[in-house]
Amino acid sequence: MDQASLARKSLDRRFSAVHGVEMTRPPRGWIRAIREALGLNATQLAHRLGVKPPRIPALEKAEVTGVASLNTLREAAEALGCKLVYAIVPETSLDDLIRAQAAKRAEQELRRIHHTMRLENQALGRSDLADERQRLIDELLAGSLRRLWDEQ
Image (cartoon, rainbow, N blue to C red; front, side):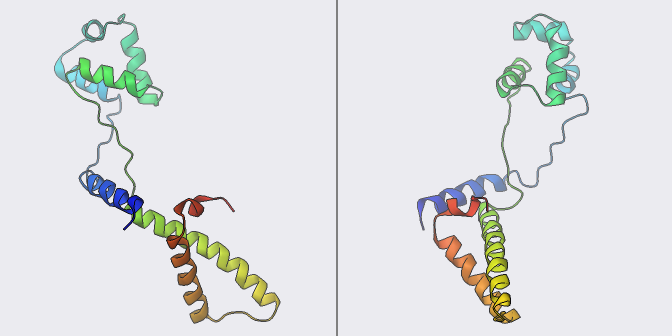
């Protein structure tokens, strides 16, 4: 097993802890929801952050619209006695993403090959197409994974 494969497995184990977790942001944002739940007004939070009070509504709006920086969110979380948790979590395992991309690339290549062979009256049957698809997938997975993501 190569280093990239081990790294994928390690990341997938870490992702498994959060796969079932659904954390939908409150409509007015986490900062405002937590601030209000703690009984802090905007002026009090501004003082804890070391900013002027008008900055708090702007910060809360920036969070909701998605333009707040991670650093700003981290500082706000700390001022609220919280921590920022940030992750990009794949929908499936990383190996499944790689296999799906290999299948997509194999299908593109197979369409091109099959089209050329049909023009030469040498079209492949379903069984041969399935075998060739699997051969192409195996070949793509055995090579450099970077090739999988090249645009064609």
